[in-house]
Length: 241
Image 1: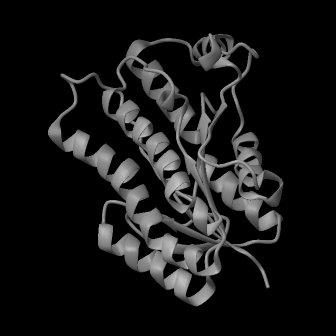
Image 2: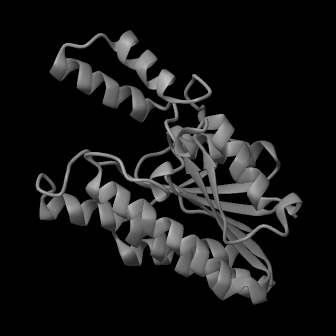
């Protein structure tokens, strides 16, 4: 019988690569997102809707069981505290934190019943460091790091592991959209801006979504059975500077 991986935000970017990786490794994948993707069984679900998230995960767990959970859905906001509106603050925290809370909470009974499971949160290099113009996003990713640690401690007795991957600058469609927006406003040359971002990384390049997916799969696998409660930077060395 195939193992089951449930991911949120698996329709694009890092989430899509994670969903594809688990499919390639023989998992049945369920992707909770607001738009369909190219991997897994799509389940339309808005992470801002607490009950909708609870109901979707509960249905999957009841009908199929859950072996791996990947709370990945999230949004970014570029703004300092003064430029963050209450609406923007609520939106970032509702999706990035409350969504992950509901997503994980709903899955725990099914993992406890099986006495095994792995949760791999998708956090950020901003779980370790601060960055400018990233007030709400940074706050949300620090919260995800905390969620990974406390979940690991609370559920270790049930053989359920919880860890977090913490990507730095990864070359995704969202990254290119952000660069395009910046260049449109500033008149900067995209190739030059892209190269500047590469040179910020000690390894001299950006990360790829597939590399993050490989790390997520490793942490969820039996090869990582003694790893729990840990945060794993995948950032080309950026946070070591």
